[in-house]
Each structure stands twice: as structure tokens, then as C-alpha cells.
Amino acid sequence: MTTSHVTTHVLDTGTGRPAVGVAARLDRQTADGWQETATGTTDYDGRIRNLGPEALEPGTYRIEFETGKYFAETGTETFFPAVALIFELTDPAQHYHVPLLISPFAYSTYRGS
Image 1: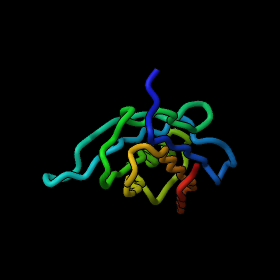
Image 2: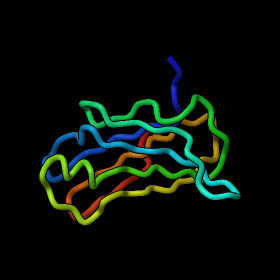
Image 3: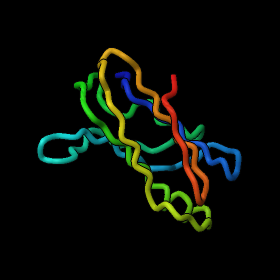
């Protein structure tokens, strides 16, 4: 099994539980715009453990989460139909964990470990 250097974890702070079934896409910024690198969906624990290939080039990346679909499936109104987190990957040997905390009308993130 290949190990990705990018992982994520989505928690629904409104319910206090992992956000299960949130689709996400990892893109890399190029001279021509954003290029899709990988896709994934959060598991029973709200995690995508392998988002992307084993090796990534340094650069600017974006993870876009389909939060609107997640909230629609739970019957919850939301202000954010999607959340896009843009970050710099500077050392391809490092692990980049990019968590997302969501609620219907707010979100936050940080660099995890």
C-alpha cells in the first residue's frame, strides 16, 4: 500500500463527530491553473488517509471539500457549499496533515501532525 504525504481529517463541530462521506479533491497549482492530483472521501472516522500519490513536488496545493453535499445529506442548511484550503508544500519528504473543522456556518483549519 502506498502512503501519501497528504492526509486530512474532517470533524463536524456542530455534532461533535467525524464528518463521514465528505468528498475532497487535491489540486496542484500550475502555470495553466489548478490540476487535479487526487480525490478521496472521508471514512467512518472522518479521515482520508491517502490523499494523493506517494511523492509530490514542492508547490502550492489546494484541498477542496464538498461540504454542501455533506450537510445536505444530513438535512442541515449551510452557508459554505465548499471549503478550499490552499497551502504550500515545501518539503516533499514531510507529511502534511491538513485537518478541517466544520459547522453549518463556520470552518477552521490548522497544520496538523
